[in-house]
Length: 288
Image (cartoon, rainbow, N blue to C red):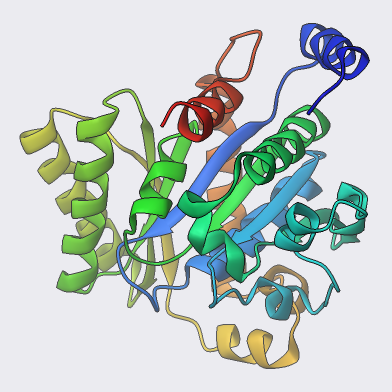
């Protein structure tokens, strides 16, 4: 548990520091390129002089370390389960201008954690919120209780879909579920793997209209990413797209999406003195 000096220091930091913006990146189904977008968007935000933490929450299927071309010995679960480890031991820093933390398989059983484990996880997030400008959580595909509960603690949700009907349906279902539990949640939308820009924009417009009609909610379009053969090459080379092929069509589109996201994010940035994310996390963990 935190001692009084630690609590006082945290309060002083909160009073003088703008807490990190927390974003969950999700998809209704797997195979839509969500982790690639999470990785490259994080790097682009880092290039825009933002301090970024990328958190791999795709439990059991996490591959961000491969996309970054790095490997780290410890995950956040190692920190939670081993009190001898410091948080800095699990943070992989200065990787293409960002920091990265792996989730670890134990996160999937978060509902079964003991109180001291929950407190240790909370204290880690408490530190990260004060240390970074953006914390981007690359969530697992699909909807589980743990995924949805965690998403509801975050400030914004970035939804990745493709033009495939099943992907569109799943993306809508996830937004509907989240909206019905928190109608103030901000949604951003990206259409990936479009044959051309027209197909991508039609997909986005269709989803926007459906959400507007049935949920009475506006969602922010960030743009379209084209199907591009360099994606497979970048994954094989274990180098982020934006680094390996900076002038490729998909990299240029990612840069435009990053700029759009920054503009929208700063315009809608929460002004609370205390991070709503931390408050939501504490409510989730300790008021069951």
